[in-house]
Length: 377
Image (cartoon, rainbow, N blue to C red):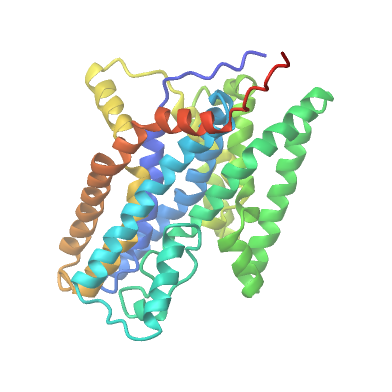
């Protein structure tokens, strides 16, 4: 089966669509957001669930990156340089804003809490939210970072998933990966039912700290990547899938099933996934100017930066009371600040570090090379 995946794709637009879906969804948390805005944005972001879409795209593209990487070292270096530089920059920006704007006054044990929070923000412990920041904006300075440990768990588990899948393929059981997908889908539905109707500390831990409820989206992306040659005949046209997605969404809503956004039903999301892949691999445009713009945007992708910085900007604007009497001006300031900071982060930190990627890989790979054994004379 020919499974050659075209190098030219339009995933960048879908990444930005998902990123801005998250940004606009969180903008509803502004204390001055009008109800009409909340209603409209709430509906639109239910149609386009940003977090599941980003998880699906990650499952697709990171699976390709894993298969194309020369070694596990190369794969993990790429992932670390993609995720952590903007996180560290975001933390630095947060600290500067906290102290320069007088958001906090630390005394006694507060300094220990600040140290614990700082360590968490530059590693993987993003769920610790100290009380000395509870009065700033929404009460959690950068609460959207809960997805980072989820993404990292997928990165760590992907080599094992690929090894398991290759074992099944070698045994003539390539369909087992679809059975695993069904199991993940069932877990997703059952978990979100209990998390929505009978939430407790255990469902919160599973939701915010583990990969389990989200594995379906990553695995679906992995399968689309693995079996693209088989599935591409179903992705020739995006329109039928988009129409079906809207029809299913409206039908389920009319029946009282609140399936959307982060807890989107796996059946509904599978239809959306076919739409995404259909759009991503449409024939390139004949318009040279459009292709140049797309290439430029892809090479200067700030979609992850938008996600990382948006809540810091939102909470800072709320704390300072910027344009609290002018909603449009406040929204535009929020968007402009987020885009500007994400762009500066990309130019000043992320791209320079990524340009050193081959050097990091070479150094780390050299350290892993076995020492030659001395030959007997």
